[in-house]
Length: 634
Ligand code: COA
Ligand code: AMP
Image 1 (tube, rainbow, N blue to C red):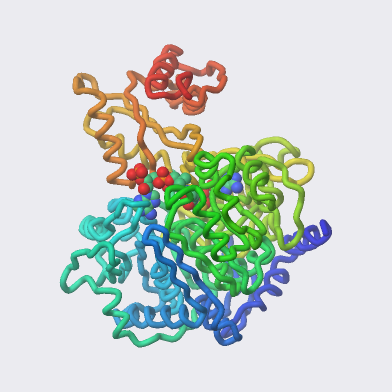
Image 2 (image 1 turned 90 degrees about the vertical axis):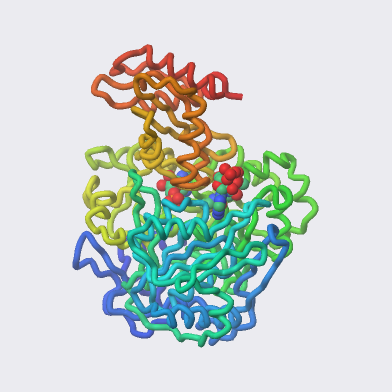
């Protein structure tokens, strides 16, 4: 069986065109491609150029026309509204066709952008698929982002239409989306022609005459719209993710390559077949939601679950087991933080015993490093394989995994196992030379990247090249550091940039610093990700105030925390900041971030030889102890 992995892997790397060309035959094409792998415009690379497809057709109509129209396509399970709603493939196809009709009636055509700012409700997926049906490019913005972040994305994507809802529900709290949307549109230079708003029963948003349209009213008058063939290389979506500045990167995904890679991955990585129930407990605002709540499972003909709830608190730490048992989920995909939350509330997994989990075959975790404690807890209590896998918004699907549909390798804690077929992963030193097995270096992927990965950054080919392709010529820079052991197991240790992972959410500390620096009394600041038992990492801020500031420090701290919440969003979990006289720096003026982090995490550290003034470290230690970090950590 190991041979199966080796053969598949070798073929995918030595002859990617024939490997992916073969798997592309599992999909429907209006016109067959001329070239599987088109690298005539290096370093840009395109998949299945000359081919014409429609992703929505492949995700819905194809299944209806091939006999599974009455099978469930989507189950919406919402403990926060106490409701469950099910859609067969035929029903979902009809809803999507109708909403495509609504969009078309507002002038949305192939290539137009549509922003979707919605909670975890079926309408979010319906809107995404309706865009795909028309060849329009969707850009979903996560609901936990503030108006300012939404405005940045509106300016970059310049959408013709924005689709939103009156509110989201965070456990018991109603988050009014509409005022956030209105504020974002006010702030943005680019204005949409209209907004389509779903009024949820729990909250009615006030509408702006002449601009806002009621989802339900529009649907009641809509004529279904058919699928529009698009070029395989045309963009399907833009998904913004944190970069190293406040300016997010708009990752662009194509239609053809994305469809082929995701459909293949459903069996190869997740061992899912048509009719199986797949649940990705994430959010449609993140890449996991795009790939494995919406597109992957539907392309494969599985049943996908849209869950509007949390692992704990809706109503308790048994919520995941209830959903798995009630809907006969075969595989669950979530972030380790969700399991840490469950484990914290129900350490002996008592609530698990209440449910029949006999259909549950595999747990997949990703989005952050899987700590051995969480891995073992899940393995011991569930008694099924727990699979760590490594991927990024940019890659769209996993770079490294234990491919359950090819060969199940023994798990090594701390490793997401081996490179997935299609991914030629290497570890290099700063001069782009390979390092020995077991040595840490930059994790890079030899070009060309497989299909389904990022084509470029929206409106910014230059940034795409400089961010990903320039530092290690011939390779894609993952910005993760790690190593590969003698058996080919990959270990992902840390980011090499300022990105941190908070509860599986990707954030830029640089972007938080930009907000803090805007406070009139802050002279200098630094934000670092420190270890957190539940969320993996959380950001903490260090503020150096202007000379002569006499105001109460706690007040200033409260203000900066509120600023981050208002400008980036609650999802940053930025709750701790402290005022210091000076930041520890090297003699050349670089902030000693690694050392500060070690102090915060209460780890041993060496006094850096290049430090400008060792006394600054004592000051940082005191400040950290005061806010419950460093030696004061519990
Ligand atoms: N809309 C509005 N606000 C949102 C939001 C959304 N869609 N999602 C999160 N928030 C808010 C939360 O309410 C919270 O606000 P608060 O500071 O006022 O309490 C804040 O953003 C931080 O959210 P989160 O980090 O998710 O923390 P939490 O305490 O609400 O929940 C977990 C902690 C572990 C239960 C939660 O993070 C979780 O379920 N994680 C699962 C992993 C996951 O989905 N990862 C995504 C990638 S796979
Ligand atoms: P995102 O773009 O939000 O998916 O975040 C991608 C980043 O999350 C990666 O670059 C890694 O730093 C981290 N990450 C994702 N999956 C894993 C994993 N399985 N193990 C370790 N880190 C991971």
